[in-house]
Amino acid sequence: MGKEHIKINEEKLSDKYLSRKIIESMKNGIVSGLKTTWMLTKIIVPVYFLITFLKYTPVLDWISNFLSPIMQIFGLPGEASVVLVFGNVINLSAALAAVASLSLTAKEITIIAVMLSFSHSLFMETAVAKKTGLNVYVVIMIRFTLAVFSGIMLNVLL
Image 1 (cartoon, rainbow, N blue to C red):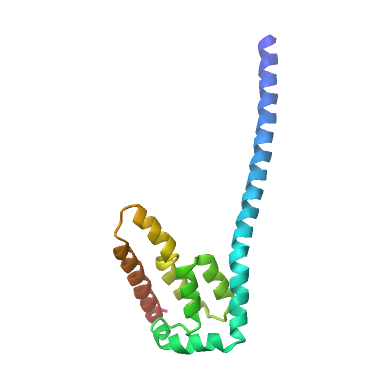
Image 2 (cartoon, helix red, strand yellow; image 1 turned 45 degrees about the horizontal axis):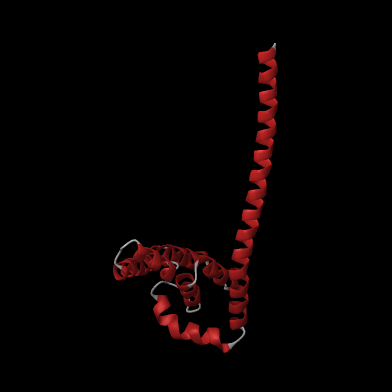
């Protein structure tokens, strides 16, 4: 009977242990989720307001008109250049905020998404590539070329 008593206590301990681990895991997940939400909010909200503000000034129209001939190659309006710049220079969250503040079609958003999948966060990821010993110029050229090629191809195909 002594062994059964030990076995039952071990089961109770393991149930308590599992319960604590589940609660601890949930707490860690919630904290991690809130930190990520805050980090994204610090990027997305200011960019969204900046682009929305620029829509009511001549600046976005100037950028749009200036870059419109280049962006037409990809089937995108000139204002989409802001999305590509934010995505390449800052990160995908900034690009997402810029996309949300503009009126783009599903085709245009798809083209932008695929282009940025190849060339997002150029500065950050180029620094990482450099640390691994890769030729930075080759990495940038490959990523940029893939982005341009995919944008042109999607414009033709979609």
